[in-house]
Image 1 (cartoon, rainbow, N blue to C red):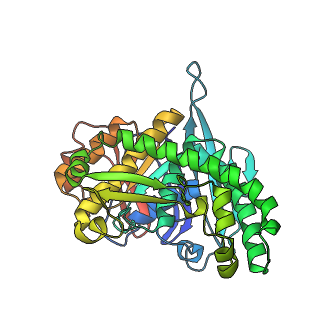
Image 2: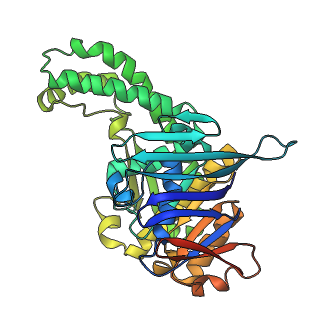
Length: 375
């Protein structure tokens, strides 16, 4: 399900751009500050409604404008017996945060339907590395995969989050007895337990496939092991029992300490948990980048295989982080997974030989303008 056309209006220094895309490899070349990263940011924005560079939409919308708009065409397989269909998609976001999304003729006020349409993953030099990441960021890593492989996950999490907000509101109101929470907990516990099972199953898939990626020998040498913490001491007691036992603490601090909203991915190196010890403090940044990119690529493979459709992978300035041999391994491995690649670089030096004999499309980016380069 590749993205075949991209149109961008008012994203950072890009005023208006319209380009046709290659099904496999799209290489964007240009000096720093010309808008290369903004192009990848726009692709990510179209299917997530947010930026991978900032949380503030005002930083994404071009100065002096009230909105940004990214649209394009996606080739959707209908069946094994019919021709693939092109569907027009797009998302507009205003300065006040309002979202207008469109798939074909249907309009939406949320991005979830677009996000389900095309899995999109990214890696940038500024990308927070999993080995340094907070528990919240590592939950997002797991949940990206679960969202795409479990159709019910989005609805489960949305409903659980609503109930959790109600529970926390009651705690903030100064309730005196646990019985005032029990009705909410009876609804919330099974939702959190379903979410927990989905996350655990997805992480198991990543673990089982982690020896197949481009940096598998790095993970083996470091003794990398992934462990999932549910957000409560699951092996000792039920979630509802945890809430009963922790009521006084929850009451005092006025928020819920145990639950799927507190889950974490814990990374072990050679028998030691890496988050607070070995990994964060002793590994080189290059090793951390290799581990993080490797796990994202494995996850992308799992999602693509489960959904039976290729994903989009954005590689922003990968030449500044990895040597030529590592870049070749990353690109070759992703292409073997039938992934549509978007790559940025200052020039084609690092990619000329790598892409020799391959079919791809190359663009030059200058001051927010994009020009197709004939190969």
